[in-house]
Amino acid sequence: MKLVGKHVDKNGAGHVNLRPEDDEDMWHLYNIIQQGDLVRAPAIRRVQSVSATGSTESHRVKLSLTIQVSRVEFSSSGAPSSSADQASSPAGSSTAAPTTTAALHISGPVASENRHVKMGAFHTLDIESNRDIRIEKVDGWDSVALARVEESCVPGRGAEVGAVVCGEGTAAFCLLSQHMTLVTHRISVPIPRKASAPGTSQYEKAMARFYATLYDAFVRHIPYTSPSLRAIVLASPGWVREGVFNAMMTEAGRRGDKTLSKALREKTVKVHVSSAHVHSLVEVLKSPEIVAQLKETKFAREGIVLDKFFKMLGVDEMRAWYGPDHVRLAADRGAIGTLLISDELFRASDPKLRKTYVELVEGVQQKGAEVVMFSSMHESGQQLNQLTGIAAILTFPLDVEVVEAEEREAREEERRQQEAETLDGGGVG
Image 1 (tube, rainbow, N blue to C red):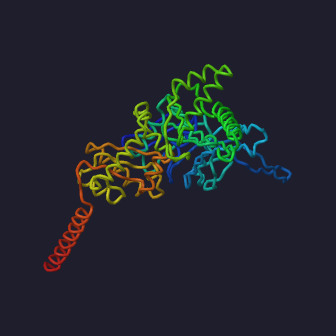
Image 2 (image 1 turned 180 degrees about the vertical axis):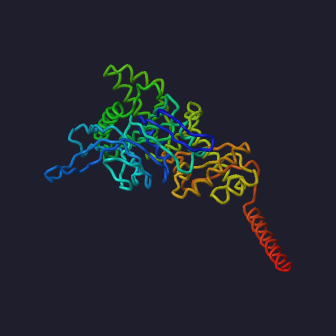
Image 3 (image 1 turned 30 degrees about the vertical axis):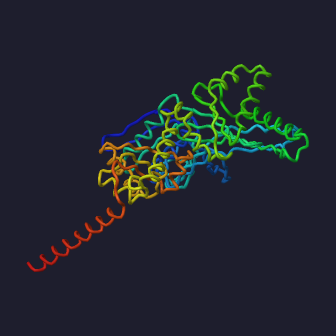
């Protein structure tokens, strides 16, 4: 993302001009733009004009529109799958997939005058890469939104891990960047059971087709020549990953692809996972091999912190709290050491609810706690969302029941004081 211009005063009033360049930038914009914001971007609108003879003509006009946001929609294109039994090629080669592109649509009434469009007319802006977008927040820019803008404009980003999660005959190709996990492609090749294949020849032929299909798909969907790619992960139950690695090295040598051979030798990390599903990426990010290599990256940090929370929940539940109400109680007592919070909570349609989360984050940061913002486009973020999207690792144990009892007693005491003040006021009268 390029920061084209930023005009925000100390009170948060003002606007920011941004230029998205890739899918991850679209995801950032989705998290920055809220209902009620004023957004200006290029648009194409069909307009009608009446000629001198009274005939009506319709034509498309390029213009810049400012709308007041009522709805924001984000979608990342799903990965196509190919299977050997459906492919036209007898080798079961996977078909080429279209480039993965995210779509961001912003809808709302037109908020500034335009000679082609009436004020209040409803319009949907389709945000495109390398086109500037201007964002103004009516209620002002808070610290979380400004931090997101700064983070999105850090140069040199891109996919840092290319992962292939595979089983016998199946594979999912994934790209992991700081804020997104994209499944770019899937393949499926039917593999007969060894026992049902006399002499295992059918099994071996099917595995050879699988390896050939996987190799072709890998070359197309994993950017192994990219300097930003720090690791190539082959993950599987059993020993499938070893067979995949050996087959790919052999094929790369046969084709004379020295670049791929070098990338596989230097960047490949083989990880055991419990299943051949994309959800196993959480296990991948917790593996010692990946932690050692990627410990300073955002998505690896998310996996480490979430794992630490679950371990704490298992051994000392009084130091692992989750849920908005309980986490706020812990924050009020200065007990939070690490706050885990999903970016999904900051997309709340209710500005008051968003503000409470912003104040919570700012409050725990002022007390010296670490705040880890989870991306709901990563598996770790989706797991946190299943725990209400917010959790905390405490610096000292607190009993939830005792704290809630204290809160009830405090509210009761406050109510009694208010009643006493009311009675005293009535007596004076």
